[in-house]
Every structure is written in C-alpha cells, then in structure tokens.
Length: 89
Image (cartoon, rainbow, N blue to C red; front, side):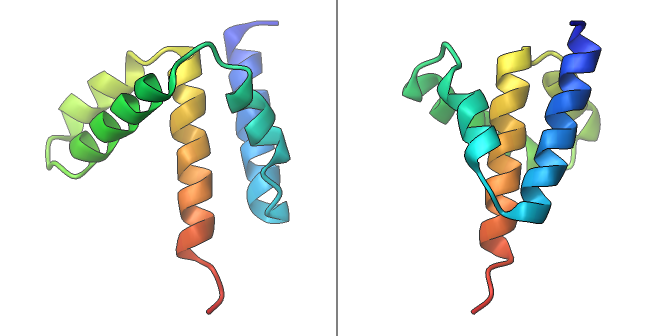
C-alpha cells in the first residue's frame, strides 16, 4: 500500500470518526506508533506554537516535513480537539 493510499484511508477514517464521535479507529492508529509520550508532547507543542504564528510558509514547510506517524498524531489531535470544542453544554 502506498503512502498516499494509506494517508487517504487515514483521512477517511478521520472523517468517519468526526461523524460518529468514535475515537477507536484513531486510538488504534496512535497506540501502535513507535514514539514516546515526550515525542508526542514536543510535536504538539511545536504544532500549536507554529500554527499560532502568522508565518504560513514556515508552518507549511514544517508540516510537509513531518513523518507519517507525526501526521497521524497531529490529525488525531485535531479530531479530538474539534470534538471537545463542540461539546454540547
């Protein structure tokens, strides 16, 4: 399976997860990654810091150079964050 096909499947799984509010597919992807908790924290700190800046080119370059696993973490984070931001009160 090519990286593009794999990425498209992950993107589709993300969309299905958003609709279903079911984190199991994403949790399975993240739980099998070979990174440490510190790696994830550092990645998310970079992601938040860069996304809050007005330098889109710098963010795009950083994002484009992430590994497949790092993309998975960032996408999963965005799904979770989106769901928590839209919780019914």
